[in-house]
Length: 228
Image (cartoon, rainbow, N blue to C red; front, side, top):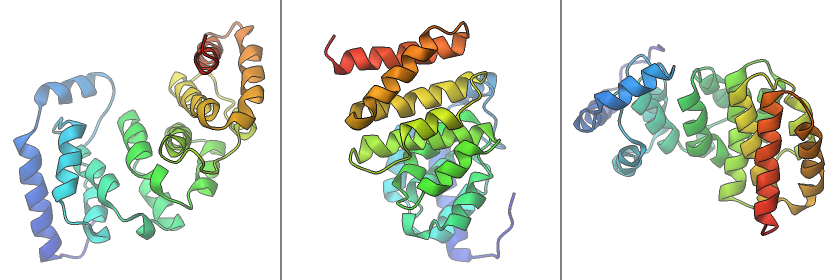
């Protein structure tokens, strides 16, 4: 956990957030997440709809968001991703925050809440895809898909780069993240469809189970787009 210079205003805001979270804590959800391998220092099991409602009532400031993010409390981290001003997320800050991503829940939620709304993030996503950290690799892939969902005309990393960079098909979580990114490419980037279809067909003849899963998901998406 990171330590910060005391700030009474921010301290009171954090106390208010904590009290709000405790109103909606759900032990059963926490237990289910623990059983599936998702671990936090503290996890109240609060649902995302409640967190989004809370975000609309929470003061927006980088100082508050930063303290929430480094709390290692699930709900505070997700709230930080929702409220932090995108313009405050410099390259260095993005890389520092990303060091805290250590489970699948943070991968999927921050891709949706944070990274996809940062305009200058693409070169950092490229770093993560080409790096060794599997959580950041998946984060980058999910973020690309989320970018296209929210801004269909947004420029993202091209599909061939994604397909070449993701060479670890043994990790099903990364395979699913790649599938999501490429399926959003199929929906919103018509110029890349032929390459993705050829890629999917090449995988469909492979004996590897994960490659077959990826191929089938992509080919199903192509059929859906074509109205079959």
